[in-house]
Length: 500
Image 1 (cartoon, rainbow, N blue to C red):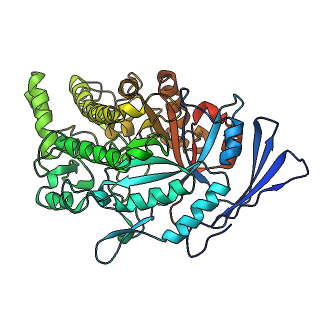
Image 2: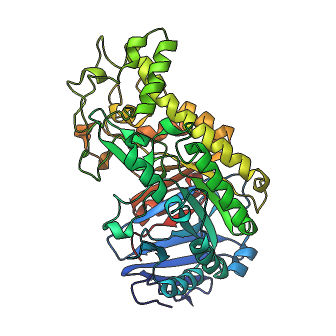
Image 3: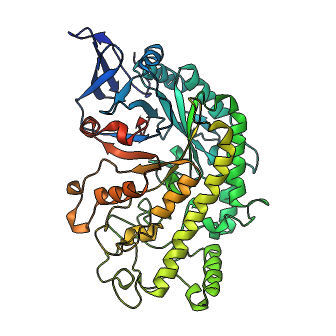
């Protein structure tokens, strides 16, 4: 089966091989070809061999959920759902993420779904190919676009109907950020709600700011979490109202069709500060980034915290010796050893405050989400998994100060584990962890920049035995999937596509 007109191209042909117990599936996603040989015994899928005939890699998303039910072979036969299997017999269903350009804003300023007929045909093809479900970003800037507290779900009703009628499941990502700067053209991106954008035109302090006053309008600063600047509501109330509206609208799909819900916590949906803004040219790898605490509301809170500490002089500004976006750690006093470094009393105070604000932001939002999801989290086959996403900042990991992590809000150094407090927050709310770069190895990164994705992920794994892992990577080779104990790290595998 294939679709044309710019949609997914998915050709799948199932036929017996020379072994009566083997089946061949041939996939072609717009030129990305893959032959999957499924070797099955009487009751279990024993192995999945993936033979690559293309150069591009795939995104991968997944998590381990020990308390989640896994379909038996009998159910798989009924649903025709292909799974990957690890050496420990943990089956991993395959998801495909809706492309970033699924939604477009037309010339009249109205969002719409692109190429609906092509999508419908593609969904049927994906189901026939054994795909388990679809991951969909649900944009705040589309649903509550024009007016506060007025939610228009009709595009998602249409899309979810297509997906459910195709027999596919859903992983939903509630997205409170903008992707305008990530889009190849402004028409394809989704902004924050227009009424939020209008408030931002009058008050740039609702966005994160750096030390030079440049703002990042992809996500609201957490400084406004509890300040009623948005037509009488705080930012937290806006997020909670949106989540509640979503769950009320799609209650009939919760558990049965919608299996996981990711909650956006920052830029790109990740819990972090926008310390490395590559899309507007301010930052490039391997710069250490800059602290993002210079909006009016964050500075007011810093001043209050410094006064409570008995050091009002510490509340006037962030570190003034921390370099700039593209600085390297060497020669930057705050990230070296010395009297005014990250090890000083002031340095410890500031970093505790900076990272603590981020943790509090996650704690409050996840608490609200967990409360709304409570009736769907009985750990049964129809329960809904709560997911939170963080970034993996792996460059300069082999330094004492870990400067790129510090500017992003992760107070992790050679002397302090900055991820354990985050694990506590996620565990408190039963949230799965969505992380990137699980497949990266140190030898594939520039040694000059003291990178260590392996070291960072090993540190996380040693602390987070009770937290579900997930991953998302823009270029994942099938060779990695074949060599990895899939069931150890993944609950699902998701292929991401940039365009329809």
